Length: 270
Image 1: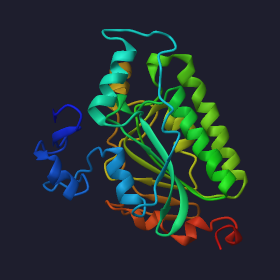
Image 2: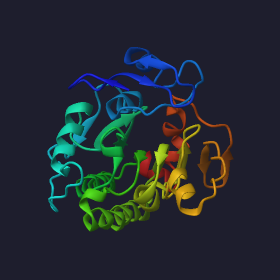
Image 3: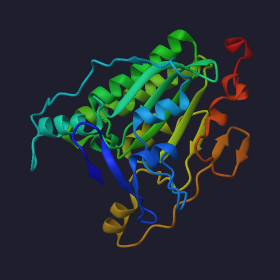
């Protein structure tokens, strides 16, 4: 991947076929490789642009940014890694949340950016997600989440692990109010994100070829000495229904379905 400071990646190499594409080509094809149709990692701002109706996205908690509570350092300090991630991605944190309209329906949107420290969930990411669910519950509107994460943020130690219970509790309150939650799982979605709120959706959508689990295949093979089975293809799972054909971008159709929004009480979205 070639980068230009302050503007994100100029070009990206497809991890499936090895073809190098310019950013303009990727944007034109919604970050799907034109050669092999592999779904590449998508910047959060581009993802929001494909989902939210034009001009309707209002960001929440923009001023919440991670600090360095443990003064963590390995080869480099955590503070330096945060500054580099902000400079290279153009976003302030690994997750962006906001209120918008999707197909004319009001919704709260949560979008991860894997380029920002692997989309890891630290204390600020957990706080933004929990507040997004609280905002959706207060407004009595559905929530759509797009996950791309390596799991908990190790630089924050126990603080990051505590976020799992917090975000799952907020999702539970949203659910008990009879409100719809659509969870989109992209490549990769692992660790504490999968184990907390991302797998709790009323509708789960997995992009084609997405690796989803608690730990990645490389860690499994290194730990057990046995290669894991090939990943299953993505799909859409609705309680009582199943669509085996993986959705390709843009998969706005499932997120715009009134059947999903009205899954509990039609009066909520009348």
